Image (cartoon, rainbow, N blue to C red; front, side, top):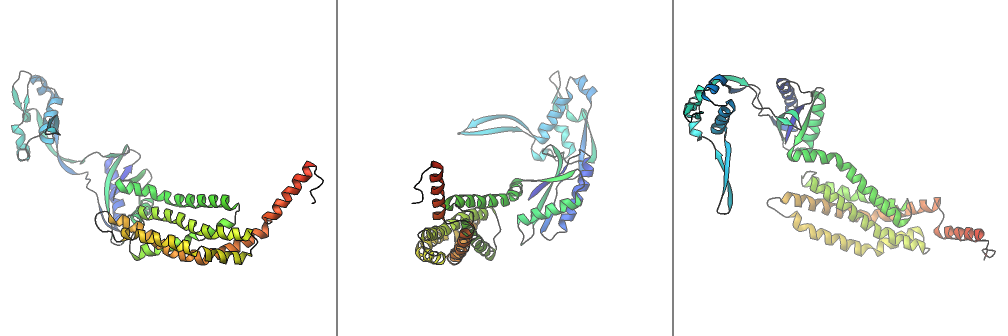
Length: 382
């Protein structure tokens, strides 16, 4: 994992380096992190190049041309490009590595003068050995120092994200912060929204069920059955020693819909029997018996269909294994729990529903009576 320690106040890089070092020491003390490393140095050995502008003017050479030649031979410049055998190749100008190993090799680099002659670049520049910044890095327009983290064995990247958040709050002074890069940045931004995604998923399912049953209590018999499947999903994932990643989160969202659908089969059948006049307990038991076979067939078909994902091996197989184990574990435990607890929940909430709200038949009679009264009908009593 990689992040940048940033200076929001625009201070010196040396102070930013000190803040980053203290931050790294605090991270190294945590057991969740195996290694913390930063390649950035403020005392990096280097040469300071000074161009003799007056001598360049005497030769008719621009100082920028001297620096361009030096950059081209030592660092490399893009010169051109050409097509060959259906491929595009770039032409880079650069000295052979063996001819630029030390400063004495600069004697073999020449600059073209105004009269077309050549002069050694060492006559136009002077070198001074110094220590300074390795580079000036910016991330999101702020000065930043890159820090690389390696999670310890037995800990996930999510644990490291939590640790970094705790340590930064305790060690980073005001005006300094951090930002992740790469996949860690996506994980950190998505982890904060995971709870909202699950909450909105449950809320959407509840609203749809309320519209289906025209009740605020009956849908709770379906909603309360979902956590049983989630428990089974987390149990199987922990037994397999897998981490909670994006594949598991996608499987959980899919599992919520599957378990809710299965619970709806029982609840809807029980509601129909209750509307026909059957007692609440008898309606719940009859619904469980009648829907037992289709529920088991649906669950077993899904479980058997996901088995190839669980036993898959090779590159990228862990994502399929995590998704498969998440759904299979949730369906195994959730299906058994649905058959046992959904009838109980229906009996409880249907009893509460009828206690606090009139029966639908009574409500219909009251509406017809009110319509007859308002219309002036004298025969509504019949």
